[in-house]
Structures are given as structure tokens and as C-alpha cells.
Length: 134
Image 1 (tube, rainbow, N blue to C red):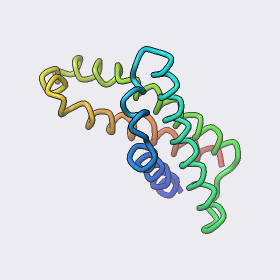
Image 2 (image 1 turned 60 degrees about the vertical axis):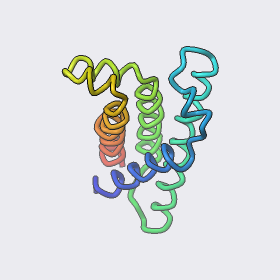
Image 3 (image 1 turned 135 degrees about the horizontal axis):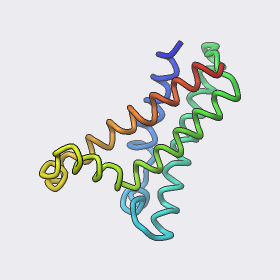
Image 4 (image 1 turned 45 degrees about the vertical axis):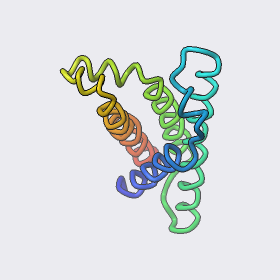
């Protein structure tokens, strides 16, 4: 049962990051200001909303076995983890402490590490929550 929630959470992630994220969210979500926190919160809320629609659609259309408790826990984790990772300091710290400083400073590595963190630390635990709490 883990595969279905994981695929839906991954689809929600990509939709939230690439289909529904506005330029304003993208440009400001990491700023240390009220604007930054609001943009970050709006972006995390977008992820929660699109993922909820996907999960409820799968429940209605294919009978995906998810509970309200598991869904709430998974969505809370998606929102919190996504918002935290997108503040960008975790990505920078990770890259500097794993010997990828040059890759980080070139601007090429951070987007890939960002996506890897979202999958490993965000989506996977959320899928496990959905599966365990059904």
C-alpha cells in the first residue's frame, strides 16, 4: 500500500513546486522577512491543498484506503517539511557539510539537493504516515 500514497504525494509535490508556485512565492519564500514567511506559508499551503485534492480523488475514484488521521498527519508533515526545506538554509548547510561547497556556490547543486530533501525527508515520511495510520 505504500506505493500508491507515495506516487500521489510525489505528484502533489511536483504540482505544488512547478505548476502552482507563483514567481512571488519562488522569489521570496526564503527571505528573512514577513514577506518571506508569507510567501513560504502560501507555498506550503499550496502543497497541502493540491496533495489533499489528489488523495481525496484517489480515495473516491479507486478506493484508496486512507484515514482522516493519516491524511491529516501526512499533510501536516508535507507542509512543515516543505516550508522548512524551502527556507534554503538546510540545503546550504547540508551541501557545505558534505563537501559540496563549490557545487553549492556554482548555483547548480542546490535545486537538486532541495528536491532530494523533499523526497527523502518530506514525501517518504508522509507516505509512511499515510500507510501506517490507515
